[in-house]
Image 1 (tube, rainbow over the protein chains, first blue to last red):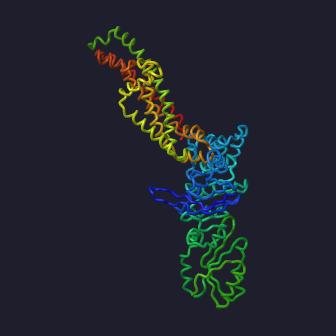
Image 2 (image 1 turned 180 degrees about the vertical axis):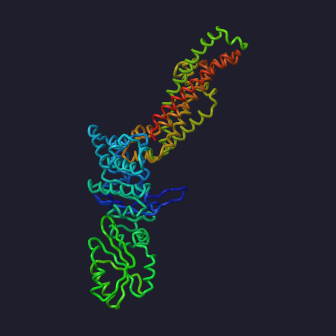
Image 3 (image 1 turned 90 degrees about the vertical axis):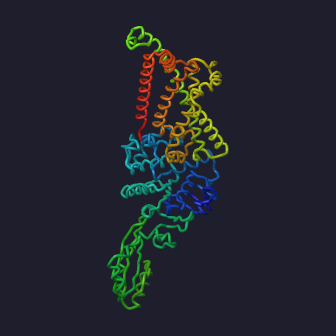
Length: 338
Length: 231
């Protein structure tokens, strides 16, 4: 469990104080895949560096199972660091060591029993699918393979938490996807808590169960990924989740807007997504429904359907239709009334 | 000496008698000085590197002072002309080997004079190492010695080897001046016999031997660096 309370990180750049973290509070439960998303300069990197104790904090607490990281020094700090595994954007592998030695490195550092070291390294390489590459050097690997080594290394010394700092930002989409699947699998299999730092919403939607949106060194909104994607409150959150919505600029939509009726954005969540609500309102109430745009997406394995429809008919029927949808847990939002 | 005299057998014998011990003296001085200046210089280079790196060693007034002091000493050592330096370090040499004259003393003087050069070379090699790798090591919970032995040295080894080769070749050149303190060696032969006795054959003889030694050293250096480099 990680509890961050009122965290400040202030850099002194030439007499000017720059606050990278500005009173940040967050709570991360064990076993979660917790995402932090923010634009560049939001404080993501500072947050990672503070949590992994690569940088000291200005004030505030980082409680790891109740122990304040910020107050530890020397060997006590090194012990706390062993609870974390770090996966870096640019891999940061030992270029002059083989894949095997890279994965064995944290084990040597942690004084892992020599007799079980080999077994452990092979087990990790098997987990990330690189058994055959054990004697290769990082320069002989592709980006995705390098990151797999990075993940195996992060997992080697049985960490409680793995922090992925823009771990997929240097990879192509297909490789990103395979790395994210690997993270998901490991989280499920081993129950290790993952902290994902990224600027890409697609990464958050793919793996995270919780998300916090960072802006100006603070968390402006956080919570369940699915909920946040449907009901974002702040402008920044809406911006981030915008790509999740559909394109309003198609021709059918533009033409439909000019005809009378009520345009409604409806969102279906979870198991209800496939249910035939549109059919039901057409039958029940005397309304016509035309579909203007729509998509179905999966966020953290929850299906979310979104349709933009135009309901036309008697005013009462239209209102009743919308009420019916609301009562059945379909989120509606009237975009305009023509 | 005329051109024809160069081919007189006695001259060949003399050339051999003078050049062989001189070559051995040079190899002795350079070998000894290379070994010790590389070891000591690298240690100083490491200290300079870690005291300037906030990640490896918390910045305090003490580390700042150590870094600045070492840097100043290294700069002073590097700015004094070598011929002056080997004479200037004579008192230290005498403390170590009891005398400041002769081949052994020259080897010690060469070592002391070469340390600042090696220190600066190795420091800049370490400074060129990608910070991310050091970060990864620290994040694994590695201690400072572990980071030095398992990460910093192995990761910079190919570049270190090339830089050590540069230092050794430099030492070969520097050893030519050791005649000034009675150190002997090839440089001494070139000056005393080649220059002052107008023995062109001696001069060319030393040059050929020196060129061969430098070629061999550089070849070995490049070869080892290539083997060590897996990047």
